Image 1 (cartoon, rainbow, N blue to C red):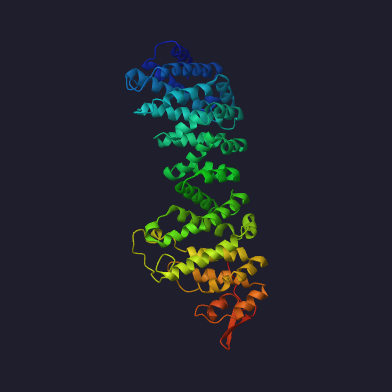
Image 2: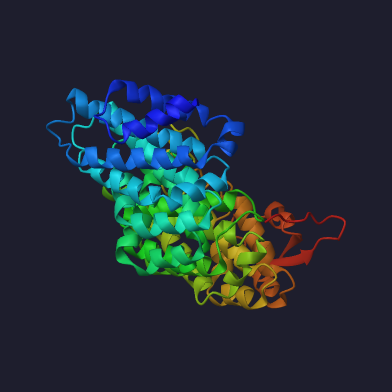
Length: 481
């Protein structure tokens, strides 16, 4: 950037806006892309850019929806975008420039410009969105690694400007806004989201954007890397959400669990909260037995909650305290009884079926209760793993015979036989009372010798009863969780 162009920046602050000023700002933006120039740029250049921005803020003040398509208004928007672009480039990995621009008040001026532009959002032009995008990017770049700048942005722009920016019909502007939000968030600000109603609305909006704008990665990063760290915020959000929003949040929890045990950021208290939600709402799934309620979102939330609990209790040490969650096992066994009896009473989604071709619209996706009974059995097995109290409780609730009665092949519950084998194995392991009970069961046509052999036992029939005998150690196949 030549000294002549630097002088012209000063002229731009006083003269009437003209097209030649655009070339000056474009040259400044281009020059500041160069790392060497950026780190050695004179302070007065940055100060002049700040003065230009203040001048443009005054010009934007007189714009209206009626005149923003006029040539002078379009030029003002172009100049604003280029000034933001120059400042954005100046801040890339350069704390010196960040501090200089902050000291010049550029953060407050930028937020004020964004506030003014948002009032013109109706019928906005491409130049309008370009100015907005560059302004948001500038805030993102000035905040990176600079706590003072983050504080200024948060104090002067949150929650109202952020909330309005997230409502823009422009995916790039929304994505850049989420980038700034992700950069500024910390533990204390997460606490504010939980306690301040207006700030909570922003958190809810970001979570909903995970569904409506799936290509914007920043939204998912905010929810999983920030929101999920606070069980209190997650609980508050879940309580305030509608059914569709809850499904979005639960899908994000499920995806987070699927990334791996070591990377999971969901705390135990959140897991315990979700277990309680499952207990309170589990009966909603029974509505799926009626075709009218086939897409009931309350029922779908129960299904996703069950899947999450199954994953959490699958030998993830962080969540194994769920084995002692009050009445979780009882609720699961009793729900299995209800859906099992409901499936026998009439033909519905909980009935045993042998239809192994999915010809209907959506295939398996059109069957929301697919594998629901199998997952109930899986959760029971998980909760009983090396847990004598839970093993005994399943026996006391008549759950052993119930699980054995679900060993038949069922296209509505793929792999239900394998999960039943797994559950029975965990229920019987080192539990003589449970083993004695199985020894006394009459053959039901489902608990045959081959099934029990997979559990580590062999069966002998004597006087109409099944006698259970352990396989030799070398014959026993290890179960999987």
